[in-house]
Length: 144
Image 1 (cartoon, rainbow, N blue to C red):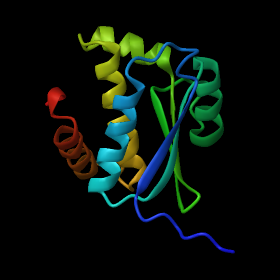
Image 2 (image 1 turned 90 degrees about the horizontal axis):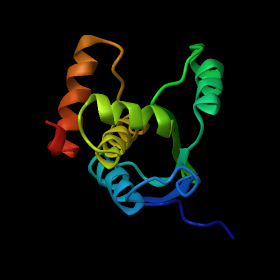
Image 3 (image 1 turned 30 degrees about the vertical axis):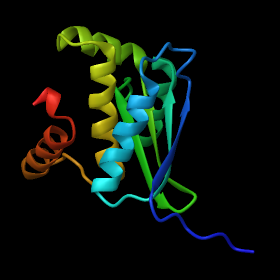
């Protein structure tokens, strides 16, 4: 018996949040779903928090960049898995201090950015960066 493909976003499955003491995980789930609903993304998303070393290894393997990065997005667009977001929580904490806001705000910013990548947006060119920034401001106006 075949199951019906998903017709809406979610669920968002979170890994590593307890280990890294991630604040307000329900808000992060809601933020991802908010972006996906607006951008017509459907299906489950995995949100993974892991070490800078693991993030660096993924960044090297998939982007050929030998450094950690705040968020990596892997869009699959499949009914069984729309995509995955990987976040380095230590880098996110450093960025929160640099941008003068709390960790929850920085993580919301990162999942918004990552969810937009899952929905097909990028920022390789100046026009793409303008579109991406406008969408980030729309979905997370506290940072506008």
